[in-house]
Length: 113
Image (cartoon, rainbow, N blue to C red):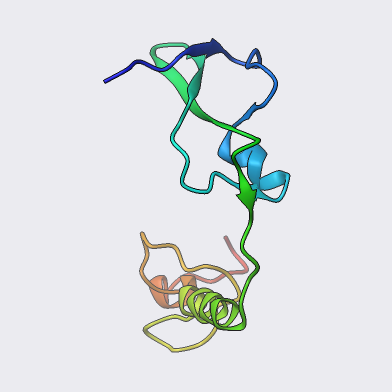
């Protein structure tokens, strides 16, 4: 097992990018291995690590298909639908509550909160 080169935060050489940087450029790693990592020190915790990929080995992002878009819409609708009253809450229902706020707190008056 070989060790990866480690660079300080914001000092990576040209030609390397994180997943987010690749995505912002319309690219994806495309199955290539991680070639290096960035480390940013944090107070009282271990360093924040970001993996780097070669930009010249990156591939274009695959286009969104009709089926993928439909699945994404269905998933987001399910996250907003209350399982108790079956209405669209208009926001993503908090997993901590498990239902929309009016169903979770039926006795509270929203005007006095």
